Length: 469
Image 1: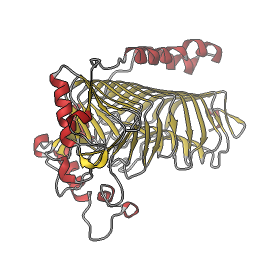
Image 2 (image 1 turned 45 degrees about the vertical axis):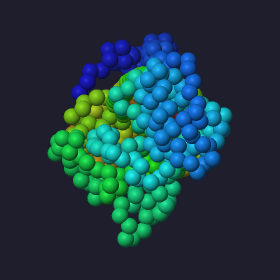
Image 3 (image 1 turned 90 degrees about the vertical axis):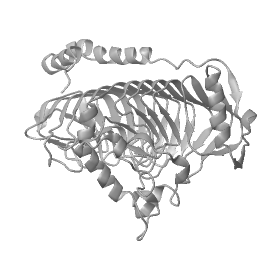
Image 4 (image 1 turned 30 degrees about the horizontal axis):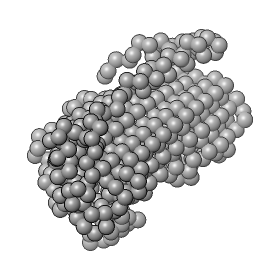
């Protein structure tokens, strides 16, 4: 268990014990000054101001020619020249996976489209990846980098991951995505991989790939520093869309994600530090943003939390949770800030969703939301669930504490909030301030919660305090 920051502990204790006029001065400013400091210190990658046009290496933007060699050769030439931008002009460029290297930016100018070929053989040889929170050797993601510094994907164009019901998506084993009886699917290999993680099998022996049907991600950046993903549109992802793993200093800015396949999470920072996600639009088939830190024993083995993450000025459309933490949080999550976000869709479950269980375990703490506008969600606007999937059937009781939601306005939801902890490990220090829950159908749920406070908060026009319990 990692220590609680003293400034945050003091701030919460102030709010729990002092009058409201004092808490506004002493509590409300400290966390958001910390968020401002995170944004200020996350810097853009250092990319030399030199451009290489992909067409100079034989790429044809006719949507037919295979441009894989052109991308590979252009990136290599850029690297040898000390770095710069590989520019993709207007056109449709078909390719296999693209691997980024230090000091190189992939820039999609104008209406450029990079269309990834869905032939699985193109994504071999196996690379180190993290699949649903467990490390293994699997197919390369469409865009992949490992152990690099100063990398970027920018521009106004589109990356098309090639996912649909007849390519990657049916591997999920779900009929609504094209699977049918008699077809193979990911289930057996997924079970085998999860057991390998539990048993501590060496990562280089966890070989997946052909015959396993574990879909690759769209953009996975492994163990990199100073990463920028900016401006682009991402569609038709095989699985998770933007997935930084064990990275620091990451910016995801003005990105539009539109991908409705299975497990199509929009952005999943996993065991990352110093991340800013801002100005993005998420329209996804699963959680819009899902902050993670590894699954079960494999997450505990690496023991690297996700921390110091700021989400701001984003729009959330379809998806499960808008700002989600979990369920793979075995390495812990802390110091998460979300502000000035807009949330609206009958296909969205919750505005804030925290999910874990007694198999995942983990400590989730110091999560702050402010100025969140919710016009419609289909379940609880705020959902903290320690009974997700395996529920209480495990040996690692999770800890969830220091959760603050300030100035959230909800126009319509099934329930205002659902806070469910364990008797042995209750939720702690849950704070609501200036929250308005309207159009609430089923009230709220509070079980096994300690130190729950609410100020200036209403449900269907009626003032709410935890004393109502």
